[in-house]
Image (cartoon, rainbow, N blue to C red; front, top):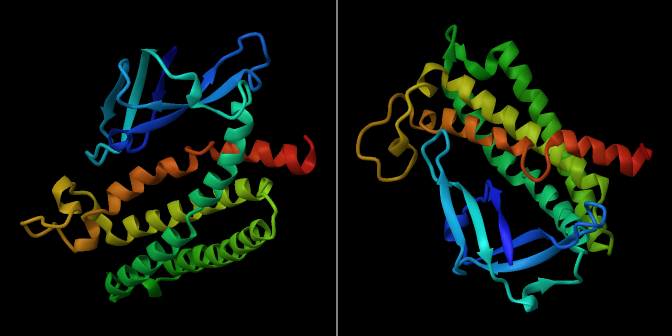
Length: 247
């Protein structure tokens, strides 16, 4: 019987199953008394409540569990070993959160915008300060791509990502946030007007300013979460310290 609450359940309104890390031994040390359960979202006592984000979207949810009966056969692995399984999954999640492909696509969009926007009679990508920030984030992204390929190669060879996944998560999220910040800066005041429908295909009216400005502010604010979910970047630094330096 499960009771509790989960906040920030991404796309939970579309799920038919949810995995939960539940306390099954109150006497054990915190990490050792957790079990991994699969729960059917249609089970009586499961309630999903939407959380509206700044861009007006329903991307995340709260999930409440009130006397939810879960069959014992839905236990994954051994009882009280749930955190061990979760840590294994998190290493792969953090490698994915690094989002190399997303950053590559966003950087290409930034370059197109910076070539179109004018400042002092010249394209923004010729402005020394802005161009320097673009160059720095591209260098950082190229370095991260190389590191990401090394991790993938190691896993393909039978290895398991360790501290590397935390490193990728930190740098990948910082890089993506910087690119989104530069896009917002590039479109300037056109990032300010917010029309929720203008972000999606099929919007009937002309957007305020260039089309790419419609999502600039929404993306910037929404993706501040990148450095928080999957274990905040501050936590990742603690993990790196423990795994590499033994601190």
